[in-house]
Length: 223
Image (cartoon, rainbow, N blue to C red; front, top):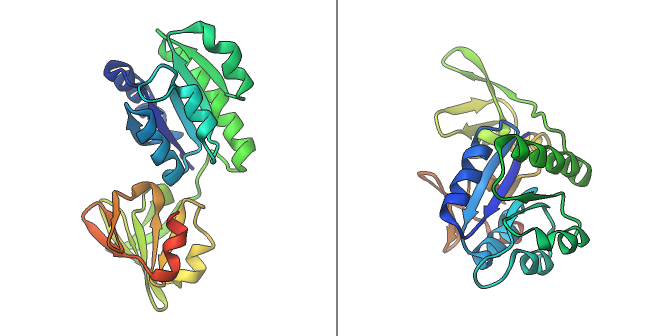
C-alpha cells in the first residue's frame, strides 16, 4: 500500500524540492501539488489523501486556516520557514513541524512520523498485496495502486494499468471486496482507482486516455 499524499506550498522551488524528496520514497504516492490553499482544500475533500504536507504562509488563507476548514482530516505535516507557529500547529494535532530549510534526512523523519500516525488513524498497512494476473502466458504481479480501473465482463474482469490490460477470471463483485478502499464503484460495470482520476464532467470520468461512464446511482460515491 502506498500512502496517498497531497502537497501545498505557494513557493515553486519549495514545492519542487518537497516533490523531489517525496518521489524517492516507495511508501507514498503524490496525488496533487498546489500553490493555492483554496485549490488544495477542494482536492483534499475530493481525493481524501491520507497525508498532507502543507505550508503555513499561503495566499487566500493560511495553512492553519486550511486545517481548520477541513471536514476530512488527513495526517498533516506543516512545512514552513516560521518557527513561531509551532505552538499553534501542535494544538491542531499535526504529525510534525518541518522547518525550512530542511535536509532530506530531516524530511524522512517527518515522513516516518506521518506514516506511522496514518497507519493508526486509517487502519492500513504500508505493504500492499499484489494481484497475480496472466498476460501472454505469463503470470505477473500487479499492485492495486498501479491499476487505473476495472471493468466487469460477467464472470471475468478487465484490469487496466497505464502499461497493460489483463483479463482475470473473477466477478467484479468478488474482486471489489479484495481491493483497497481507494477503489470506488462508479457504475455497475466499473470500479476505479480514485487517485488516478483526472476529471469528472457530464456523467463521465477521465482517467488517462480512458473515459468511464458514471451510473446515476453511483454519483454519491464520488463525493
